[in-house]
Image (cartoon, rainbow, N blue to C red; front, side, top):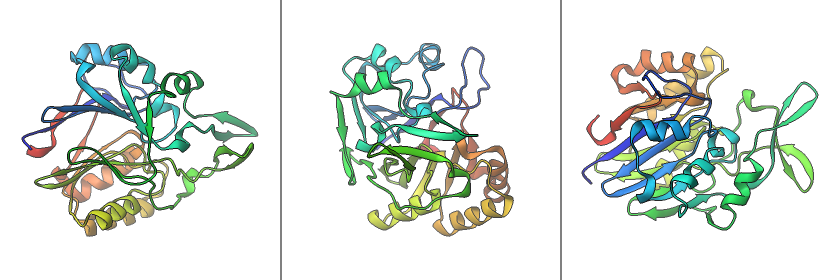
Length: 274
């Protein structure tokens, strides 16, 4: 393996002229000659950013949808405009209706209805770990664990509102000469439980993690505990973004120094040469 290039298409922050940020996440990933997309953001800035970055999506083999929230699935239509032959991958549960409670109202936050129709005939579902390309894996269902700041998130199950356990959320991981590189959409069910699980099922070290850790809103002591758990996992590099939160970014940076980097829209990085 010669290179593992990531371009950040969508993220909550931007530092480059002409690019657009939004609450969401989308990565363009190229491993040697293989290219694919991880998540698609909301779809508000994706078309502009693809054009500004000069990306040709015609050779993208598949689009991985980490879970069924609008800020990770809403840009699917934009991707299909760029390449109508795309194959999508995800958990069956990502198509369920999902809600967040605001006051006394249930606000829908799931995959947009029109997106469901667009991908319904061209999506490959998995629940177990699966190798989708050479050395590229989707985790399948992850261990259950929940933070206080996820209370109030529901899904429809058997025509009833039930607490969402994020059964549909998966991570993508790639085997490299340096170790595993893991891509996380949000890790609602705990980034540490997720990484411990991946390390356990593969028996390999985790070299780098990039994506959302869903730590925004946690207390300092809760984040510090997670930082300590990361130290035990011996992760070498952290690309923190989206729902990780500024406080968590600062606490990780304080501990791990140059091993931590931000991922604003437009970031291009070869993860094999960190």
